[in-house]
Length: 349
Image (tube, rainbow, N blue to C red; front, side, top):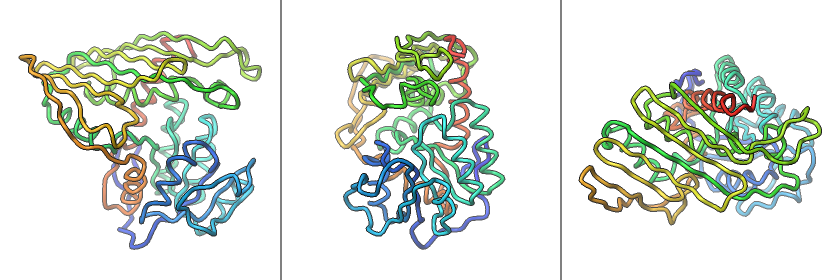
């Protein structure tokens, strides 16, 4: 169980001696098919036993290394009724997260849900409370913290190696195709801030030492209007500025319509650091750049690594009560509250 303010390990659980049995809702979602299901299939801590899809057939999912004999359901509720399933991974469109997270928890399942966990802080808090009532683990599937470089940066922040926070900047841009992609649909929780905001905002909150005390923001909206959304359009590019009680001034930008770019820069009173491809790192992202107050620079090598495999393996450890969550619900809710404020500042609500 996870307290909404960040209790890091579930109550009343003991270390499991066998793999956690997983079900997946919407297994043909791109992130599920290309990243999370392969990680589950590769992990000794996981056994994928069931899929549920309302639109696809079993032949639509071809995951190398996936165990044969996975049961296929044509309705999400049928999977939740499978007594073998102990944990559920949910990569559904954002607007469907709360409904199916709470249904999964009510069915006695632990839940790993794609980011953003919710489209509002109130929804995120309600989902956390549902996990408390069910005494089940609920975590947001945010993989960046599991990379060795990300861990090293987090350690530098937590240890005060940068000195007092002064300035920070993050950017995440890329080109997102439109046909059939729910991220362009505001009635399904679309928009770039929801999709990429967690990456840009999480390290700024960590460096700032808490949620911002003041925010300002602006957004560019898609030219197309969703006919089912009462005249709304999604944000395709978003820029925000945040001030923190610690004295940090932090800015970020994210876009669905820009050339690929990912960068994080943190500037303290004693040192600064920066990292390229900061949010979806892989085996090739093995160092970050460090500068001290005298201007001396160096590359600090951390090694590369997997991000999805350690995420699902840590989830099993949290369920077993043998490890804390690296990205607990307290962090998820803090980001959701900040996103709410940024959206309001940009006139999106």
